[in-house]
Length: 149
Image (cartoon, helix red, strand yellow):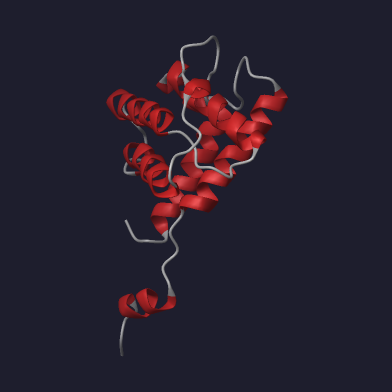
């Protein structure tokens, strides 16, 4: 996948999941996650989580279980310092929602059992993660990959 497609796919998958996962009941551990992760650790964990979903058009149950495991790892890593309170709460909603979700939940239009306020927090977290963790190549990298005449 090219450098431009990967961030776009990850952003699309993240946005889709933030609004489509079921979060009924407990089971996740987002609230217990550390709040002092390095940005590099956080972004590596965030990007690893979406590898299983961005490499396929329709995730299998195995792909989704690998995603859930990777998001649980993200919960173990936690969030970097400097994340807003709303974004941190959205992280907790996101981690818990993924823990409780199934592949069938990918087709839902909303997060069942989650308030509008929590959905907005999850959206704020996803926007934060996509913004912080999407690598945009610098001009020299783009020129190296450009076709020559």
